[in-house]
Amino acid sequence: MKQQREKGKKQGNEGEPPKRTASVKKASEKRKNGKDTSYGAKTELKIKEGQRFPLTIKRMGIDGEGVGFFKRQVVFVPGAIPGEEIVCEVTKVRGKFAEGRIVKLRQKSPDRVAPPCPIYEECGGCQLQHMTYGAQLREKKDIVRQAFERYTKINLEKLDFKDTIGMEEPWKYRNKSQMQVGHHQGKTIAGLYSSNSHRLIDLKDCIVQHPQTNKVTGVVKQLADDLKIPAFNERKRTGVLRTIVTRVGFETGEYQLVLVTAKKEIPRVELLIEEIRRRLPDVTSIVQNVNPKKTSLIFGDETYTLFGKEKIEETMSSFRFNLSPRAFFQLNPVQTKKLYDEAKDAASLTGKEKVVDAYCGVGTIGLWLADGAAELRGMDVIEESIQDAKRNAEAHGVKNALYVTGKAETWLPKWEKEGWHPDVVVVDPPRTGLDQSFIETLLRVKPNRIVYVSCNPSTLAKNVNDLTNGGYRLKSLQPVDMFPQTAQVECVVRIEKK
Image (tube, rainbow, N blue to C red; front, side, top):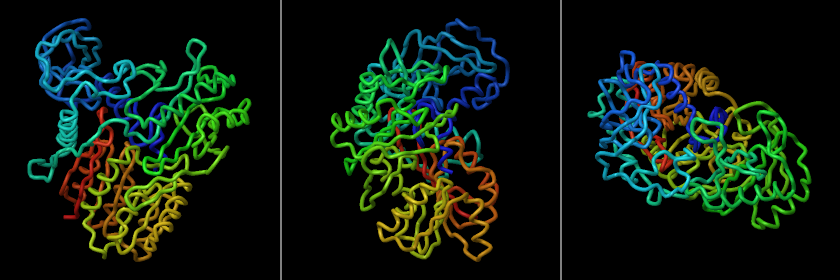
């Protein structure tokens, strides 16, 4: 089910696209259509566009915007920080909600700082660079709190609900970039689409990306101009180069360039490979992926190795992972270790448990837990990921692991009929959360513990509500900051059978 992570990611990456995510867009659409009653607005707005008024910012919304109330109506203000007093000008009225902008800061938050990125407001890839990092961590915990207050009746005061685990150095942490390609003033550009628009912003030195990904993207842009390789035009359906994807192994130093093209034929491809190798002599792998479809998915079905290895390697602690171009791998390797350690703590394995890794990808979480399990089984719908997981398990001498291709809701009932019952199920779903059919499967199979690794507090809270209504109870909730400078937050939760 990891392939779902690619849905709606025209300008993003797995787990955390740098642009506004699908769930964020959905939430914004709900606000636009007047269907989101998250903040309790029950009457139509009487606020008018262009109206100005003083506003105190109470909380941070899921987009990272400030949330305030004017005459009991909700107003969302990008760039505003909880605790600030501002003069707000209404820019849009959307059903029961309004959006505004800061006209004047009457009382500035001590957490406000100057964003270091020169195109921060224009790009929109990050939402929180204007806040101190400590404030980001505090507000991300509150985003999780809001989600559980909204979708569950769980008393968080009686729960083991810890502070957000942050980074020592919250910059240059992303190991993968996916930059859309276009033309501007006769030059090839590559970057992200600006917030709420289809205007491509050229990113030359993104400060949340590993520096090598910026370097590789810059080289390919220059070569596209030099060799006259045209960018794909989505509207006209012309051109070749769609996306420049780069993944870097933080520990190994290996890196892979993937050229996503609209057709298999690349003009002057041999010269292109020769020049890439000359300008990037240490490149590990050059790959072409062909995606001719009219789709928001980054990758197509055909992949060809143009130079070097088909995959790169990355290490985490004692583990070494093989990563194919489409295989899912966490985007922040530094925080991934902390995330997986929290998952291992939540699993509380004694060496006797049968463990299922239900969205296994290349097997990372499962292998992290394998030494504490009697047996490990994992599944994923992407065959490439399963093959990588098998090789990764073999490479680490993990003999108690079985990996299969398919959905968890198919395999768990089958194993149950064969007499194999899981004690612990670990899930790390896409932002859409768990499928309802999978939740129903969990409630039928009834493992003793469920460890849920989430990249979306809203779908997490909804899924936890379904599970607690079905005979489980939430025991612990640990936010982890995988994407500093953005409004996204991951969580590890422990759920136990009553």
